[in-house]
Image (cartoon, rainbow, N blue to C red; front, side):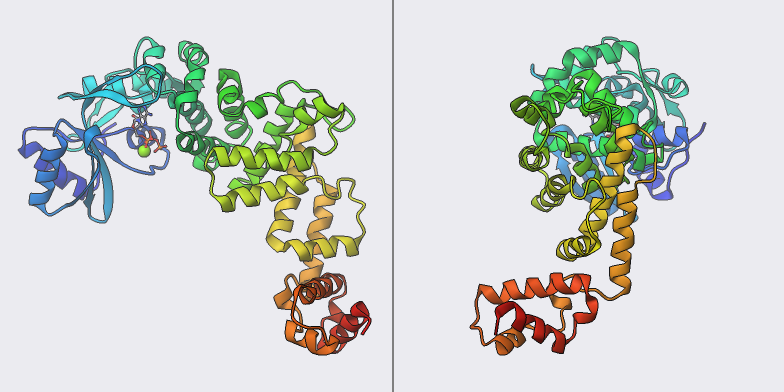
Length: 458
Ligand code: ATP
Ligand code: MG
């Protein structure tokens, strides 16, 4: 096929041509266009050095933001869009897979540049002016075969230089639904320990992409998320980045409730949750403590409380934001709540008022995924349905969900009870909230006054 690009990019390409060079679009844009998939960003490349590109853009009045001059990267802003320009390169890396090229060598041709990219399907170039494709590594053929393969004949050359490429391999296979070429896969298994040298932030970002792989191009979660997680496991990447979870591999659990060992159950639960990051993280870590608790106590009781601690440590290590950590760990801590679905309605209502709407719904989603992930089928989960119904009824009856929803203030409570300001007032407020959660009709000043006096014996 012949590619066509925005007029602004053509303008830039003409200026590049005037300097005797050729501008190409490379990477995801070319790959996805050939696959008929949406394009998220447009990476561009040519033999122009960063200073030449900067000068050219300066003359033309385009804004340039230096991104990694040493690596040959500048961001060019044209017509409200940003394009990352990377000069053709041929890199040399140090031992250890830490993705720090020891020597950057700029080069003059895509035929050199292609071999410092990771996978053939990511090393396709489309000339902006002619629209023709340049394919130095056989990427077109691999797109047809739906195959991820490294750009070099010996895949270890690629995977050794940057351990993160093993996670990228799993991620692209998951997002695109591509197979991994045999030798590439074998090399990934061999090189997985190199992930140890990769920064937590880079690992985190790839992990997020795998956990959300279905959301990228809409492939069903079993074929994207679940598959990506299996690939992390099979390559051995999981043992390096999340040894706590790898410990759950093959750990059997009661066949009365479970069709799968712990790790497989965790993977399925994650894939069966809605594509929402907090939820997926909660599912991914909900049973993380089962192996250690089982080993210590001979059963799995208490894996929710210990799981919260472990989840917190893991998410901190991976540098997730503290808000994200709190949300996910809260879900891990409570995922066993009302497991048998027999909690009384007033109990549910008091809990839901305490938690708020959002967390209650998230917990219902986790419960649903957890049950489904136990048997591998999208069954109806009665306890989750019941919670949602109870929550709906609370909303419809105007039940309070926070102390701000109460028909009284702290000042009222002090007046009614004669108590001085202090923590006791807050406790009474909470008690009133929990009371009204189950009996919203009592949320009037007169009734609250009576209840507050009852509580305090005044
Ligand atoms: P996406 O659709 O996820 O943006 P992409 O292929 O554009 O996919 P990017 O991470 O945006 O992926 O990178 C752009 C291109 O840069 C890739 O296609 C690949 O050629 C190259 N690249 C990026 N990261 C690496 C890496 N760690 N090792 C080798 N090549 C890389
Ligand atoms: Mg991209």
